[in-house]
Image (cartoon, rainbow, N blue to C red; front, side, top):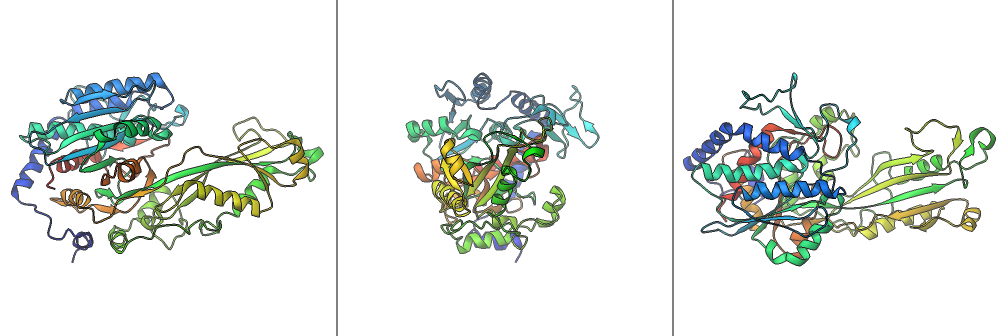
Amino acid sequence: MTGRGRLLLALGLGGALLAGAPLAARQGALAAWRAANERAIIGELLALVALPNVSTAGDDMGRNAALLADMFRRRGFTVELSPDVSAPVVFARLDAPAPRGTLTFYIHYDGQPVTPSEWTRCAPFAPCVVGPHGTVALDAALTRFDPDWRVYGRSASDDKAPIVALLAAVDALRATGSAPAWNLRVVLDGQEEAGSANFEAFAAARGGDLKADLAVMLDGPRHASGRPTVYFGVRGGTGLTLTVYGGRADLHSGNYGNWAPDPSMRLAQLLATMKDDEGRVTIDGFYDDVTPLTPAESRALDEAPNVEALLRKQFLVAQPERAEERLERKLNTPTLSILQMESGGGMKAPARTAIPAYATARMEIRLVHGLDPAKQVDLVIAHVRRRGYHVVLDRDPTDEERVTHPRLARVDRRRGGNAAARTPFDDPMGLAVVAALSAGGPAPVVLPTLGGSMPYGVFSDELRVPTVGISIVNFDNNQHGPDENLRIGNLWEGIEMLARVMTMAR
């Protein structure tokens, strides 16, 4: 049996696929329509990516919301914006004449902050198309776009490309004599990168409008094999900032070296006690509450193509952490990462010969199903205390505490934090999505957990709506960093993938 067959058997889909001539003809028509409209599709994506979209900039987010509202209205959607001062939720509806049910799509339109000087292809909000020989001139004669060319710009992949793919799928179905077979609800979140507060308020007030037979999250990168990717859950997230103190002020390194405690060294030593040499977290209880994978989930991971060699080559990593396990399995265990460290003003500050007064690390914990955000942070705090530190929470230490405790640390918890969420692998609507994406093409990689975090649990846990995610964009897209990009072939394939979902059987 082929790997594709084994995967479908593990998911209970062995007899569910019908890939006859009508399907092939429809796929051919969709591809022909896309080929005739590539310039318009890319133009719409470039116009959207050109709008700055850091969620704390209210005017910018308002412009994004207004453009998105216009894009959906031009396709016949009814659109409304939540009355938030900044980063409004954009909610769009499109009803089918004889619907098979309702699909709710979640996509976010905000992006991570940028440092323009770090971008090497084009400015983050002046998107460009790049081929093997450099920037592609977008002159009037250009109508076809090589699938291996890339669009560079903030949110080109995370998460504006899926918005354009969804709208193009609606256009393609209509132009080829079909139409979405399901009522469509699309909710666009303008604060996903900053906690989704407006979306969560919208969902609490308007949960009935988001109810559906299935919620589909359009976010995250495809599996590195390039195959379509469906995920049945996401990680949660929380974090903390840890500060270790020395003297009350910076002290001359010559006059006070070997006398003043060095907080940078102490912080490094403390952090080093939290993971072993293989990368496994050594904090007591850190893995205790993880929900084990089911046999079907475990089989699906075994069926995923092994991309370890590809990942090492792509990201120039000689040996990953816990090298005996594949990435797909490690996505189902929690992480502890140090995202930023600072002391002495940071490396970009002018050099100075002084022992700093403090050293700080911003730490992140990615959660998996079964873990409570607050409890995981408590485990880290308990570990710091066991290492001999007096810990103060969310405040500066007093002078008395500074002269009383030889080892002193401050912990600031990240506000909020969200738990991981997961939909059972045997959910009928989730299986229908896998079947739709498998018909006429390679079977998708099916993951119990995607690596990133998003408000998946609002749908799956709070609204009790079966929920899956579909990844469209390339795995090497540099999301959250400089030179974020989208491989254009992923956009073309994403259009066809979403058209299949919009016309799938129950």
